[in-house]
Every structure is written in structure tokens, then in C-alpha cells.
Image 1 (cartoon, helix red, strand yellow):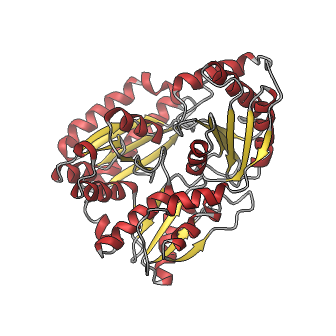
Image 2: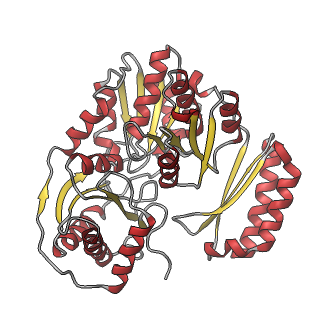
Length: 441
């Protein structure tokens, strides 16, 4: 069967790909695997986003953990980075987030962190997957299931203690009707900002629906309407953030990463004068980093792979164009609220607008086409696609870039082309997308 764990945990449509039985089995298997490598009755911190399926999956997962002898601390609705933080803070052996991040409401997922707050390795995920397939009965049980009532306050204190002030700044926050709703606006208010919060009334069915980081134009329009200084857009589990300046121009993760890298280098805090990015980073990002004397370490797409390269190289900063930014000195995973604090406080400290920070890099036109396919795994053997990619790369030379890759979480192949003009990028992207569709269905 296809691998259960993708680039960001188990994920799929609830009732079809992700069932109550599967959540139970993952919980049971995770206890057995972690028991092999440490504590026989491990403690799990469990949180969820605001999807309607969350309470059901939470119940089944907790029952599976308990049946296998593990202990559970239920934290309710929490962001993904909050669960990672609380896992470490409570001395737990693992943390689990029930979330499908930026995906639509009918999806959900299971992300597992180790006791150090980092996502589990592929090897440990493979062990869990093997036990799920075997449906081995638990050896011990039952464990305890308890509530952790102060998780949100602990996380807020973590975010705001030692953070720079943003007094006087007016900020619009789009919470995507997700886990950020109860915490992101409050964090910025505690640091002195005047905050206008939108899409902060989750009903279980409206998470990511026409709002949040997938639709940054929404917060951008509200910034202009209110005359605010900046806008922040989170996704459903708040592990990413995109921004808008006072004129409603969207600021992506490449721009945020570039500005923060340059600032850290100026302050002598950018370890190795290097930053970790991904193959999706805009060509403009690479050029401005070169001009600033900052090396770029390239990782596969996915914040887990960015983090792996950061840990391997000792880098303190890494991120993705999509808005996952990792500040290794303060977090073990991408944290959208922390990113907002760091980026907005950088503007406040320099006495400049966020647009001035973003303008350190010039964007090359970048066209991304998502192609629905029958079998994304067949991309590697599609010779006609790769021949066409090579031809496009030869034609663009140093004036552009081509990237074709299979999605790690959806039945899609992503075709990305950068060039000096939008017309040239679009032409190559559309040609390649048509070929992918014909080759892979």
C-alpha cells in the first residue's frame, strides 16, 4: 500500500482516508514503537485544530494510546507549534497534533512529535506504520487520560516573554478560522499592537475556507480598508504566516526569510552566515542572499526537511516561500505566530514599514500550476516530462528556473517556472503542465 505517513504526518479526507479506526491504531502503534526506544508507558501531549472531526479523532487516538499503556494529556484546540512546545515543557515523550494544516475542512491529519519537540524521523514513522498494518494487540494498559487546562496560557507566555515590543503598530490578523483564533491576536496585543482580528470564529466547517494563508488577499484588503500598518495571515494550524503591507501588497515567506536573515547577520547572530531554504525559493531570494554574503542551503519542500538541514548544518534560520519560518533559537518547528512577532518587531526596531523589509529582494515572476494526476508516484519514470523540463531549462539558462515535483500530501504534480517575464514563465509552465496531464492522467 502507499506510505501512510507523508511529508507532514498522516493526512486525508476523514471517513475515507483517515478513519476512527486508523486514529486508534496509530495511537496504539505509536506507544509500542516509543516503548521500544525508551519509556514503556510514554506520555503524549495531544492537541487539535478546529475541524469538526477533531473531537472524534482525539477520542479515538487517546483511547488507542491508553489501550496500549500510554498516558495522554489533552490540550484541546492548539496550534501545531504550541503542541511541540508543550511536549517539551511537560517532559512528555511525544506530542500529537490532529490537523490537516492548510487543507480544506473535510481533511484532517495526525502529526507526531518526539519528546524533543521535533517531528519524528522517517524511520520511526515507518515502524509505526508497520505496526498499524499488523494490527498487533497492545501488550499493556490502560494508561491515564487527563486534561491540561493551562496549555494556551503557557504557550502565550513562551511567545511573549523576551520578545521585542511592537507598540503603536496596527495589525490585522486573519486566523483562518483555525487554531490561531484564540491565541494569535492576544499574543500581538500583549506586545503592544492594536489588533483587528478576522476569520476568528471557527465552526468546524469554515477552517481555511476562503481565508487565511491560502488567501492572503483577504487580509491585504482589510489592511487597506482599515488603514492598518500590516496584516498577518495564518493557516489552519498556525505553523505558517504570510503578510501584507499597508498598501495591500502580499509579502511571502521568501521575503520574510531574506529580511530576517540579513538582520541576524548584521547583529552577528546568523550562525555560519547561512540560511536554509527549499527548491521552491524564488530566484530573487537566492540573488539577494548572495549579495548579502549569506550562503543558502537547499532542502526538499516541507518544513520537516528544512529543519533536518538546519540541524545538520547548525543553521539558526530556515523557511519556505509558503510562510513556514523556523527560528531555531526559539522553536523546534515552523511557528506562524512567532514569525509574526519576529517580523513585525524587526520593522518596529528599525523604524521602517514592513514593505521596506520586504523590498530587500526582487521577485522574479514565478508561475505555479498544480496538475491533478492519477498517480503522482509515476512522475519519476515519465521520460517525456523530464525531456521537456531539460529543454525548458536550456532555453531559460540563467534567466530562469524550472521545478517539477509531486506533492507530498495530495494527488498533484506541481509545475513551477521562474523567468524574467510573466509571459515567458507562463508559457513554459502551461506547456509542461499539459504534458504532465497527458503523461500521468
